[in-house]
Length: 149
Image (cartoon, rainbow, N blue to C red):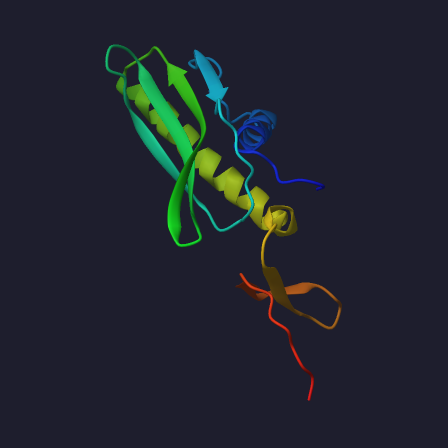
C-alpha cells in the first residue's frame, strides 16, 4: 500500500469480505455506515471495541471502533455502525453473530497483511530456511543505530 488504509475504508473492506462469504445479515439490516471522520490506521496493534444494544427508541445498533495506543495515549476511533429496526431476541442474536464474524474476519485480514498496517517503527521476524516467516517476531517503535562488532 502507498498510504495507510482509513477507518472508513477498512470498515467497507471487511463488510465486503463478509458479504462475499454470505455472512452479512442483509435481510434484517436497515443500514450500515462507515465513520464520518475517517482516520488512517497506522498500526496493526489495535483491538476492536463495540457497543451492541437496543436503540433508545427503536431497533438494535452495533457500533464498532478501534482502540490503540499512540505516544502513550489511548485512542478510540470509530469504524462504523450497523442498524436494524427489529428488536426481537432473534435479531439481537443475528447482530451479535455479525459482531463475531466481523471480529474474526478483520483479525484474519490484519494477520495476512501486517506490512500494510505498519507505518511507524520496525517489525523484525524470524525466518525459516525456506524464507517463510515463523510465528515469532517483535515490533520496535523506535529505530536505533546498530553497530556490528
